[in-house]
Image (tube, rainbow, N blue to C red; front, side):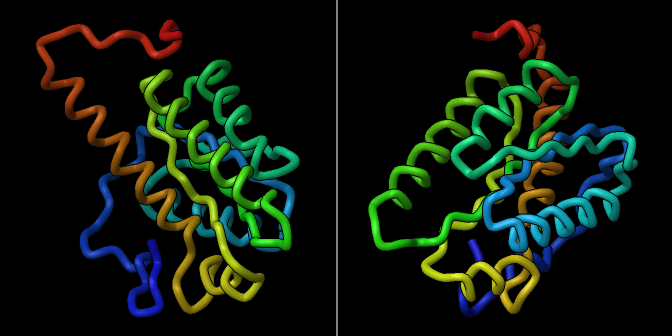
Length: 176
């Protein structure tokens, strides 16, 4: 999302209130210096939108690949309205990067649809450490802020659409 010409962490409009929203944040431990900066940005954005610390649950998984299952655990075992997945994959000398990025992207996409729950994709896929730092609070903003903003906006959209729908919305805990 961020480019060398635009910092997308600077929002054009204020976020909806997150005072009544609950969020899960699942954070990869791999590349911890980067993922902790992403986490700080996400939590800061949630708080600034009115979300109470009591409505923010944070859990860690070993690496970016495990974010999908960590996200599913939030959907399955908690009452959060959305999950924010935070990770960082740095291009290496092997194709491992491609497999991790493809797997987590497909997994998170499937979970959103399967569980009828917004999942914000706060995962950096970068060529080197400097690109990661630039996107985790550096010159291109903080992808954690952007992911939290997306989560808030998607919960608001879902809430508004459910309220306006004449149809009964299925309970996401029973979708499989």
